[in-house]
Amino acid sequence: MFDAGNGSPLVVIPGVQGRWEWMKPALRELQKRCRTVSYTLCGDVGSGVKFEPALGFDNYVRQLDEVFRRTGLEKAALCGVSYGGWIALRYAAIRPERVTSLIFVSSPAPGWIPTERQRQYLSHPWRSAPAFVVTSPMRLWPEILAAYDTWRERLVFTVGHAARVIAAPIIPPAMAARVTLQQGIDFAPDCARVKAPTLLVTGEDHLDKIVPPEVTRRYRSLIPGAQYARMERSGHIGMLTQPAQFADIIAGFVDANHY
Image 1: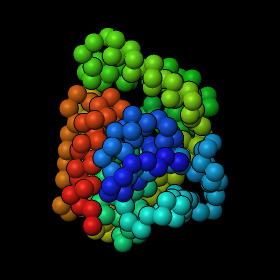
Image 2 (image 1 turned 30 degrees about the horizontal axis):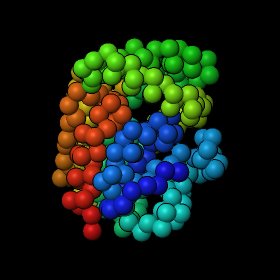
Image 3 (image 1 turned 90 degrees about the horizontal axis):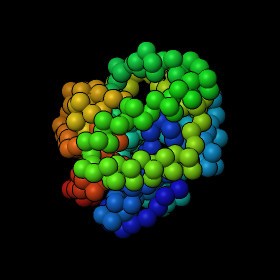
């Protein structure tokens, strides 16, 4: 678990890969501005929590209850990154008294379905893992080019991110199971139950090749009063390529709505 910094409390929920370690650049910037907590999703190495099939998606609610207990937090802002947005949404819907604000970062809204390529990964997670790893740089490279001005900066980021991924490896079947589970749930009713101030954050439309920003912006019609912020020179991984810009946006919203 990551728990550092002082100020307004914020819990950052990782994406489908399940590892908080991938988000270190953003977490380190956030901890300068607020108390920042993050963790590994249950079922992954290092989480210390088994995924119980009988509980389904409630595994993630129960785990977040435990995060609040372990950290001593009574209330906190929730920031769901990509897949983590589903977890943040469900928790805000059923535990409104604990959520001071709700933030979706490049998160798919209800109604999203995987692309054909993504469905191929889901159907054969281990077999598709090599192709997923090999093609990842191609998907992210336009964003990395846009984020940095020099080749040295691009190289430093790429090597650093690769090191984080290697140190906290993915479990392909766990990732596939998470998406399959989500696809069987209608999250629209959860949106209607959200009471917390809500912020949507995306990168630029032409740079996010994972979750199109227009898909995230659908939350504006599902959660009344939801605000929107766009990160410049970023796509799906702006929290990593532009961590200071990301932290300014997130911490500013958290502080404005902390009570």
